[in-house]
Image 1 (cartoon, one colour):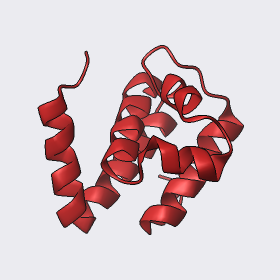
Image 2 (cartoon, rainbow, N blue to C red):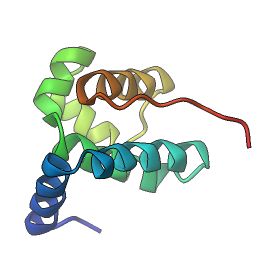
Image 3 (cartoon, rainbow, N blue to C red):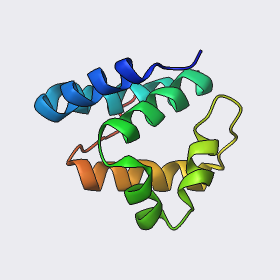
Length: 104
């Protein structure tokens, strides 16, 4: 299901003004990926990128064209683990959100 422009703008506005919301978007995206819900995790990660640094900035830092990054994080995208971790590393660095894994 495609996100509407209004929804993306609403999420971006909230992320701009609410650091806790911004952090939880990334936490939830990574938790979904780790839990095996790859499609939803990629979708939320894509939303996070759009709401924070944008794909052009991410592309510059990861060294992958922005269109390729968008495809990787699309519903049918299939990012390699090294690319996914590079994306998460850059997002943590650029947005000031630091993630750590804990055994449950």
